[in-house]
Amino acid sequence: MVSSALGLGALCGLVLSLPGALAGFSSSANNNIEIYWGQNSVNRVGGQQRLSAYCSNTPLNVIPLAFLNVIKNPTSVNFANAGDNCTVFAGTQLLSCPQIEADIKTCQAAGKTITLSIGGATYTEGGFTSSSEASTWADKLWAMFGPVQSGSSALRPFGSAVVDGFDLDLEAASQNMGPFAVQLRNRMNSATAAGGKKYFLSAAPQCPFPDAAMGAMLDAVVFDYVSVQFYNNYCGATSFVPGAATQNNFNFATWDTWARSKSPPVKVLLGLPGSTSAAGSGYVSGSQLSALIAYCKQFSTFGGVMFWDMSQVYSNSGFLDSVVSYLGGSNPPPPPPPPPPPTSTTAPPPPTTLVTVTRTSSTPTPTPTGTLVQQWGQCGGIGYTGSTQCAPPYSCNYLSQWWAQCQ
Ligand SMILES: *[C@@H]1O[C@H](CO)[C@@H](O)[C@H](O)[C@H]1NC(C)=O
Image 1 (tube, rainbow, N blue to C red):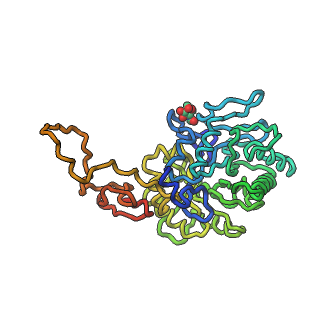
Image 2: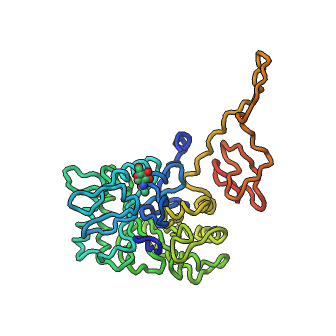
Image 3: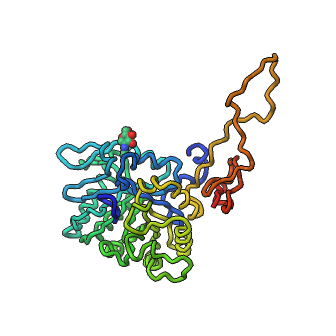
């Protein structure tokens, strides 16, 4: 990851009535969208907004909070400029972040899966000296970020908010991460079995297989999904050859084979940079990205896409909408457009007295039927009242009952 210090390797009323509309990560979907938040990798004022800014009426399913960048010594979290809104627990270097606490709850209420990502490019502790130490630290993190444990003195950076799982992003050799992941999984499974929610365990390996830093850990326990970084490497997205049945360098097929060897099979997300400046190499868009996603969709383990990072994607105008269309729609579907302003279909009653009324701009102008919708614009869907004609050379494609767009 290039442009950030800790980089990753680097709707309400109407929507609520739709079944499954508030979807977080789904193991049965191939159109999950995961975007890392926390590192403001565009590194400019106004780049990274607070977490809740990305949760209302967005097509995202998973937001990993990046990062818990030091596990042990001393435990710390780093969220770039969002950390400026945190304080520090007295006598520690650990941030206390009530705003993120509130935003996690807001995002979860909007159906997003919010995980905590552990590691990042600056993680250099090298893991744990023994499997029992690893297991102990998994328990400590569970007390800090999992369900509130009565009587526990654990410091909780997100207060009463409870994350939906953990993501592991280790880029340097680290010992005993297998037992660490196993214990996190045990804790999550026990909590679920005791009537709690579903928790997720994910990882973000780099594409060379097996991953140098996390290969052993990835085989120690079954992950829900891996978001493979197909960038900054020969095996990344820029090596993908559209139209070639066999890819010589781009290696999604290798990850698919690995993922299918697990029970249940692990989902594999196509991890990509969110803009030209998000990574050294690997950024693709337009027809190359469309072809890449279409290729990956042929694999049963394909679970969707991951991007590094939120600040890049949201600085890259139109990119996320194009991704949604290449995925064949999002889960949840985009919100139906707001109802059109009330227009009277009947002529206003005649004035009772003959008064000349000078109308200024108060009469809504109906959309001329000849208006052409530009690429990625909406051209159909329930409740849509605008033009259904696409500007050449685009045609109107049905993506869901709520959404058709010009592509
Ligand atoms: C920090 O807090 C302010 C005030 O609530 C908010 O407007 C801003 O978006 C927050 N910044 C980040 C990056 O979270």
